[in-house]
Length: 321
Image (tube, rainbow, N blue to C red; front, side, top):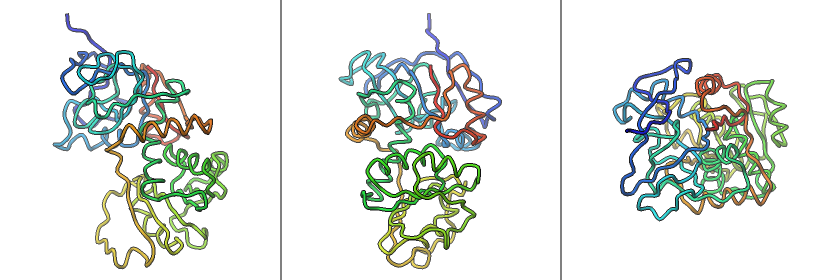
């Protein structure tokens, strides 16, 4: 008799209010793939984009189980060299788009995107790390070359990725400036560790000075303004799309990038074991815990999707199975 599991299965644009759990077969293992018993997973803005409209694109496998990250235990290691019961995290590489993702009790995942984890965090805390902290880590260190002496601007800071970046930057000794377009959230930035908290009206002219590095999370909508407010030699990393503008029309790099300022971008599709190990070790070493905004049970995935879409949760939304 076929064994079943609970999962979210989508085949068309779906409102958060319409998300339900369905009974689907537990995946069968195949060479190069491992079966993970999902213990917890974080939710991401990109999953909202998938659910709202991206699912209509031909490159999305349909029907699809969404979810670009998870933590759990190896249920069947196949030929991977991993061990049954081993604690792992998994993220990106096509999860929830090219193949079924983590909104399920079990996930069949390519072994090259499944990484053993050693951490003092519990399952929910661990689940808040993979995609968010990998993206923050890569943006800060690979793209921005962040150093303790830097003054970092995090534009659009009141999101899970913004909080993670603030936490990491403060841990290494940086001065951090955070922005939000909601006055009510200025206090949250201060609580998160920002040295300066700025209400963002769309222009930072006259509001910031001495910024060496900038993590741009609003995206194309404000990245030009961000670059115009950098010090000579400053670097801007465009990582987020909170502004919901996805392409820069009529972009002229000669005129739109100020002289002596550098523009980079971080794409989180290629995680590595060494980096994931370093992130969890960094959190343990500095006695840091991810800033979780809310934890929901898997049975309440609909309510979690509504919370994700509303943008009212301060910090990462995590699902515990």
